[in-house]
Amino acid sequence: MSDRYTPRPEHKFTFGLWTVGNLGRDPFGEPTRPPLPPVEAVRLLGEVGAYGVNFHDNDLIPIDATPAERDQIVREFRGALREAGLVVPMATTNLFSDPAFKDGAFTSNDPKVRAYALQKTMHAIDLGVELGAETYVFWGGREGTESDTNKNPAESLKRFREAINFLCAYAQDQGYKLRFALEPKPNEPRGDIYLATVGAALGFIATLDHPEMVGVNPEVAHETMAGLNFLHAIAQAWDAGKLFHIDLNDQVVGRYDQDFRFGAVNLKSAFLLVKFLEDVGYQGMRHFDAHAYRTEDYAGVEDFARGCMRTYLILKEKAAQWNADAEIQALLRELPQDDGSTAAAFGGAYSAEKAAALKAASFDRAALGARGYGYERLDQLTNELLLGVR
Image 1 (cartoon, rainbow, N blue to C red):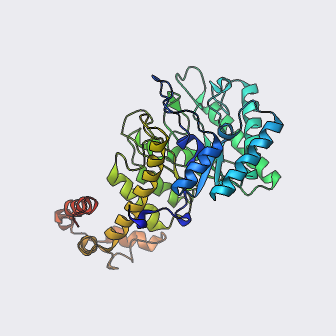
Image 2: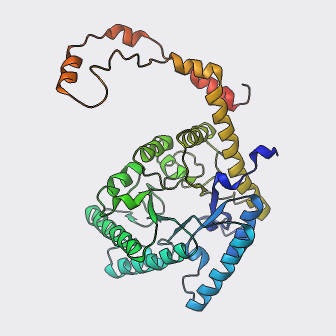
């Protein structure tokens, strides 16, 4: 492998304990890999060159652990981090595995479940901060329904809002320098999950008591499985100043949540995503929320993790090549440019004078419709660049 595709700390590549530790279980089959203890997962990630490791509370601490057991696990985990040279940039809470959350956590119809979910999350926030996390993600995997006869969606969103408001206030009260990130998903494990898309999450954030603390953690697979354009979602989040974290993987449109290795399916989409992140100067983590194929042993899991990072770096190089390609850039320059002729009537802030000038302006509609844009050539050149013939 070429050294230029070797991950370095400045690339900020991270994985979750649940990613490299995935057992290869699916709804129709038992695990194909033995459990990987958290300290061993840290060592694996250190060997492949990752920057950091993220976790749900119960990825690290069993849900029924005693306080003494918790403290011992944290000591051992901290030691493994130090030895491997890894950091913990993000943490989250498992509010979906335990049967108590079968009707949701923050949106459960049972007030005792909602209270327990808040308690569990406060403890998990404490744990995340203790280990260095600066971003805290909320994935509401059980916050939804199979039938809307069972829950009032307006009341459910009110409950979700109250929970996030409570936890923002808790973090502030503790003096934690945390940013919260909501992770949208349309379906699975619930038939329909609240806050299904990036746009829905952004609209929800605007209703919170502390919207400045809360952003989004979009995931490739989650928007793609619904047939949406992930690049557009990322652009909207970036434009809103709310791209606090990102989950990279891959997904076939319309399938169940597959969590494939980054770039394994939609290579051009992955390229355009990497190009966008690099072009705008995204400084956050590049977190791979993906799983190795069920066919793999842990040597294959290492191949999977290296592959995620290597593909990102190859596509980063391709993005720089695209930006420097003379023919591609010439095509872009041929697109209609702003020659200043419309500035008096269109652009910038509204004024009555501009509105009047624009209403009186004359446009050659036939000429506007007749010209070609060269998009076929531009797209083909992009394909050829990705195929390695440019």
